[in-house]
Image (tube, rainbow, N blue to C red; front, side, top):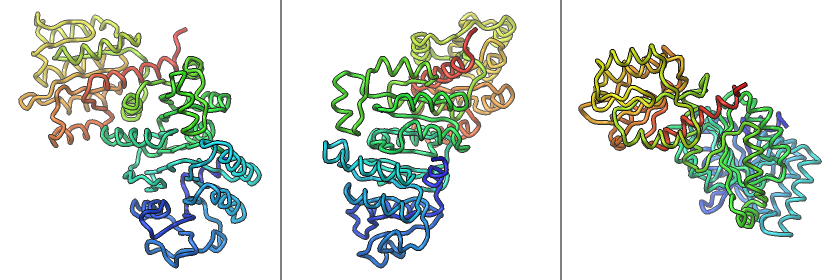
Amino acid sequence: MGNNLQAMFNPQSIAVVGASEDNGKLGYTITENLIRFGFPGEIFPINQKYMTVLGRKAYPSLSSVGKPVDLVLSAVGASATVDVAEECSRSRSKAMVAYAANFREVGEDGRKLEAALNEIADRTGLSVLGPNTPGFINGNISLNATFFPFRVQKGNVAVMTQSGGVGGGIYYKALEEHMPIGLWIGVGNRSNLDFGDLILYLGQDKTVDVIGIYMEGTERGDQLVSSLARVIPRKPVVLYKAGRADSADRLTLSHTGSLSGSQGIYRGVLKQAGVIQVDSVAELVCACKGLAVAGEPKGERIGMVTPSGGGSIIVFDLLMEWDCLLPQFSQDTDRTIRRIMKNANSVVYKNPLDLTTTGFEAGFYGRVAEALAMDVNIDIIIAVFPIHKYFPPPDDKFIEIRKKVGKPIIVYWIAVDRPNHEYENRRKVLEENGIPVFLLPEEAAWAARTMAVRSRSMHPAP
C-alpha cells in the first residue's frame, strides 16, 4: 500500500482517462488543472476520439502509452470507471482516482458497481481514491488533480475531507489565513482507501507536520483508531466530525454512503486516541495553523498580555470554558513587569496581564511580552495588540523573543484594516518567523487551546 500511495501522491507520470477538448467535460477540467498548475511529470491524455488534448499527444488506451503510468485519473462515468480499474491492473499502474459518482450512495445498482470496483482493487493491489471524490492536491510538487481551480501551494499541513464542498471551504479559509495546506485529499466513498490508510501514509510523509480531517463517518472504526494511535505520537491530528444530530445519518448515507454513528461514542474514542477535536471549519483551520506555524509547545500553560479589554475578555472566557491553564506569573516576572511599567496603578498585574492604554507603546509592550515569555510558569504566549496607525505593533520584538525563547507566540490583532497591505505584509513576516497572527478573538483562542490540548495529550499529568 505504501508504494502505491507514494505513486498516487507523488507521481512521476499521470494518465487522464476521458481527457477532452470540450471545456464542459470533467476530463477537460482535470487535464487543464494538471497543465495550468505546472505538474512537472509526464501527462498522458487518454481518449480515442482525439489526436491531441490541450496540446498534448492523446492515446486511445492506457496500454497504448507503452509503459506503466504511476497514477491514472479516471474522468469517466461510474460503469466505465470499473473498466478503467481493470485496465489499470493490466497496464501495471499502481494508483487511480475515481471521480465518478453514482456508486453506493445512490442505492443497490451503485452498490454493485462499487463492489465490482473493490473486487478489482483487492485482487490486483490497485489503490483507488474514491469513487465520488473531487480528487487531491499536492502543492509540494505543483499537482492539482481535482476539478477545482484551487491554486497550489507548498505547505506542511495535510487535510482530508469527506466532502468536496466543505473541503473547498477549508482550502479557501486556509488561503485567507496564509495557512500552508500542501496536501488536500477528498476521500469520497472510501471504497478502497479509507481514513486509516491515508493517516498512516501521511504519518510517514516528511512534508507533513499537521493533519486536519473533516469527517462524516466511517465503517472501519477499528482501523481508524489503530492508525491514529500509531501516528499521533509523532504528528498532531485535528478533526471536525459532522453528522452530530441523530437524524443526520440519513443525510450522511446519501452523501458518501457512510453511516455517521453515535457522536458521543466518536468523541470519547477519538479523545482517548489523542485527537484534537473541533466544532467548525474555521476552528479546524485555525487549530491547524497554530500548530503548523508555531510548532508544538513544551507545556500547556498559557500567558496573555493585552492593552485592551474587549477582545482579550472573549479569549479569556473561551480558555476558561475549555479548562485551559492561565497560571500566576513567577515572583521574578511580577517584579520585572512592575519595574518596566513603573508600578503604574492602572496595570492589572496578573494573568491575563492588562497593561491598559500604557501598553499601546510598542517599547513597553515588547519588554513586558519578553518578561512573560521568560517566565518558567508559561509555555504559550498570547499577545493581544490593538492596531492603530500611531501605535504600530512590536513585530521585531516578537520575532526576537521567538528566536531567543522558543516558546509559541500567538498574536491577536484587534481592529486591523484587512485591505491595508502594510498589515498583510507585517502578518506575512511574522508568520514566516513562526508567529501565527489572528484577526478575531475566537481564532486566537482556538489556536491556543489546540496547543494546550496537544501538550496535555503528549505529556499527561501523573
